[in-house]
Length: 388
Image (cartoon, rainbow, N blue to C red):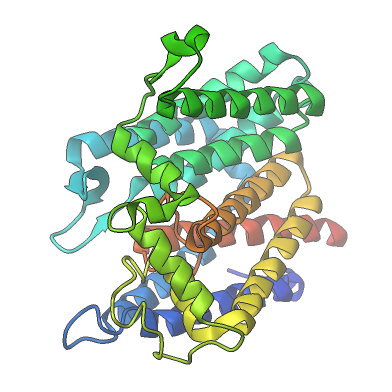
């Protein structure tokens, strides 16, 4: 249980930011999902409340275990992560062309990829901590990359490109924090991004110079419809009735909110269901339409406080393992916020990444609350040193 030292040293600003975000989730869900289930306007609000309360319980449980004890089981955590992701292909159920869920009961299923992010952060933190000062050469980057690549490919195979990109973001963020040579690792990343850009250009080009004709229509390890979803944000009007529809509706909702917003349950895109997935992927657009610029700035301010306090926790962790766990979590949450807000605004591809603590989802909420438990765990145990 919490002792007096724990209670006296809880980061109240961090907790307040979390509570404000959770409260915002219930408020915006009460309007975003109001017309989704006939006769049950608060169906998703009630479920989200259950996920939040059970998530708080999980966060408390995680906080009770000294995070340094988890380091002893990093190998088992990694192995369990791989088995959990592999189990999706054996026991998983298909939905909308993807196999991402494992049914537990007839009405309840979990999404292993959400928990895989946390398990990866825990095991990868130990992997990198043991290589402190040994990430200076190009060949030193191979082992960490392969370590993350295995679970990332299992997720990509589901297919779940969004979560795969989250894994890549976590890998990059944690590598820099672990002390990877900035010039060499940064140069490698720049080369990789350039290569991907050139590959996409060659794949879609139809009028290349004669000396490049051999590379025209370069095959990529993705289906054409997946590539189209990723690139349609550049010009969503080119397919306004297809893959560009979601983006156009989201941009309209976001822009029509104006300064003050249209008001609670007064939005058209969400209330009239013009905007698909408006209680999950596009909940940011619903919030923008009804609460306007002022509402968006307030929400982003809550996220800013959360991230700044999280960074403070990472900076004051008592060991590199704790620093890496906290940094991995902050990187993960930051990437989620950036991509979700970006795809709602039409400046990033639609990848199905939810808005942390706000979007509806049981597995995502549980994973986020476990992250909160880990951050508080690191925070409270770093403060304890002051009393020894």
